[in-house]
Image (spheres, rainbow, N blue to C red):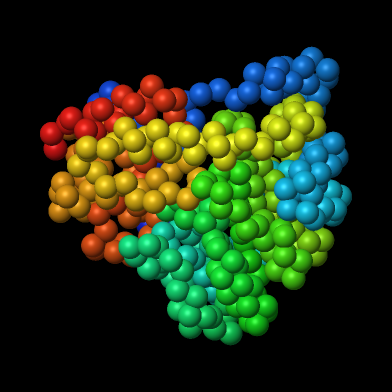
Length: 384
């Protein structure tokens, strides 16, 4: 059609799909795309099969099965000491990406400004643009990738509607400290803003650091929508099941969009997750589980030309390749996959305007130790 005008003219194929396809083409070890190469717990898989046999095969209620929303509320109470109302504050979603998309569509009107802390996960920007919002970028300050909260304050105008945060942070592996949360709260309350808090890696925080959730602060939560992912927590990214927690007034608006987007979420998975979460041990050991993988890969990369940057959470880490090449990160990641047999992710696609001096790539360590060891061996010995 000659009169077809793209609503996302600058959007191309996701860098994750591009790098995974390149890894397959060159038979490279794929440390690019963020998915585990191991299975969810066997009991959880068995519970899905049992739910199907038990007849849970039709539409679930639009907000999610009551039994799963109750389980989510109980989990939050155990984790953060507060209990959201499962009826009016918890909605089950088709993964966190859908939760984020619907949240943005629910509260952002044409012309509203949305503050993005960059690098930012790549689904935020398109959702803002599709809502007619105006993205306002605040780059994090290297080399530590800290938030300059004074710069955030300076970017707030009378048009600012929403701030989007990601804690723990993908792709940086950073977690907020108490001063970050205090500054964020001050800005949100002072300027009457809303907050969308992406906390899908809540249980992947290392070295004894706490995860400081928006859920634990009543004043901040009153203005927030918070997203979570069962796929990340239970090694089942393909199930695309998550949830959003928000105060009742925001949940009402969220569900108005959710019901016309997916309406309801895969019923057998909801039953299985509710039954599986009856045991708090199902999520309590994830920090140690993934910290061991981070540490294994870090040890294995000793002696490689990469410099491993600190990783405080998520199952991603950053590698500095400045000692190997002056190429931009997209060119380096492509060439490294082809020449050295390991696929990595450039972080430039996480920015609207990437910094020209960036020489870092992201690596995913949600892999079995044999795969991590094989990849690290390649990275120690390959000549670039």
